[in-house]
Image 1 (cartoon, rainbow over the protein chains, first blue to last red):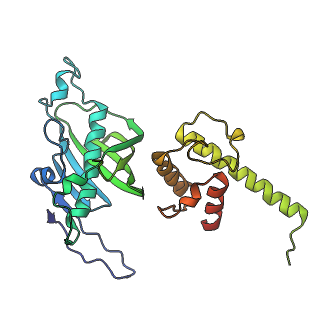
Image 2: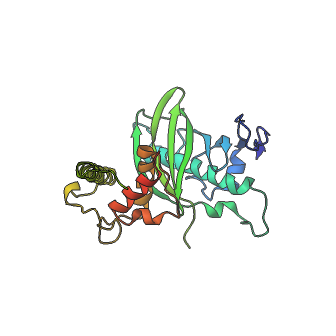
Image 3: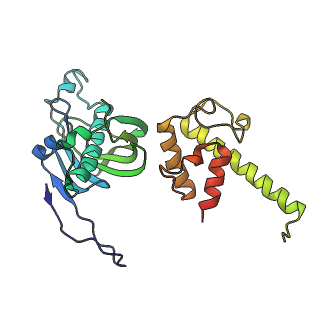
Length: 176
Length: 96
């Protein structure tokens, strides 16, 4: 939860300064998301502008449980698991907004309880196989909101190669 | 005093009908609806028994309208989703 840059927001100034960004370790992320093994699909987050955008890392190991069956003799990361990793980065970006906001009297005790659901995989294109040893660089940009829904653009790449890109809708609140 | 001639008004009306048809096609394409743009009426409700849109579809349309017309629809603008006519009125009042 370390601010990487501490630049004050300009008060209507003409010069657009870089927004304040945050980085989160795996331990930080466990405090932000309710997910746990084997479904915690993000190892680190950085360049996070709370509520706006962020980047993350998912290192893919041969020990991932899904490789046991997908497929026994040909390990490839299921596309839906790439989408899950993207969605978890999105959750980190909007939980960061709650976490980094000035504390209020009745603020939520556990920010991970505000993590919602995937509402729509509106479009997604997979352009490269993801295999053990790959490191996924994830990117998320939050878009328009309507009620408790938020549209997002997401990408995942391995090195300079695009692995998947598309748009999702997530809910930013939980039922029950 | 309006100086619009009958031809002007007629051209305007035709333009509006074209625009309504375009929006209908865009909605049908974006949401993958099983409908023809020509049979959706301009005043048919978009929710409920009309096009049966739900809240996820609504956000898809909000994103689509913003990309296409650079017009933002927010939580307070629910009147924009009354019908195709209401949506086009909303866009025309705000586009630059």
